[in-house]
Image (tube, rainbow, N blue to C red):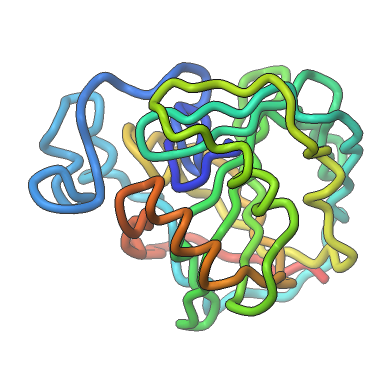
Length: 248
């Protein structure tokens, strides 16, 4: 899924984004005829956007508190490049940085940010949301979502914005961003089964929404939306029969 500041949405893997391949050539967007409510009609490949039963994002509510495997980040590598493509910035990482949940290991591929947030928690939305897109050796996708409230500027997002070159397809080979910069002290998370949040809205994505929120300035939100041409969030999707688990 491609997304707001894609430092990753697989496809753009933006937490959607399209994981194992680049974004579809079919035009889609967030307003007008190409808006999210019409994605399913834009292409047969996007059918899940309209017909899927486990779509993302969602309002995280009615969750169950459980003891489960802690999320562990072994992030160490510097970003290899940052690319502006269509509506987003993608920050890409070389193999080596990973997150693990129990016996499951996922390599970090890229990151990106939406403004405003895509997920809500208990009905509350946020100013922005970063998606850290991962893939396992077997091809399974996992997205870690970081939420941001309005407040002081975020230094990582500022570095990303400083790297923005303004031209579609423009790539910068160096930037002062290390994968470890995304890791927060509090590692409590919400988890559920969902989808990419951008076309083709493929399902089977494991979501890990971190419970602690950082801050982002209004100026940074405005600059992210300038890149995406406006708000870059898909509307909330029905939870259906899915369960949401909270792990402290």
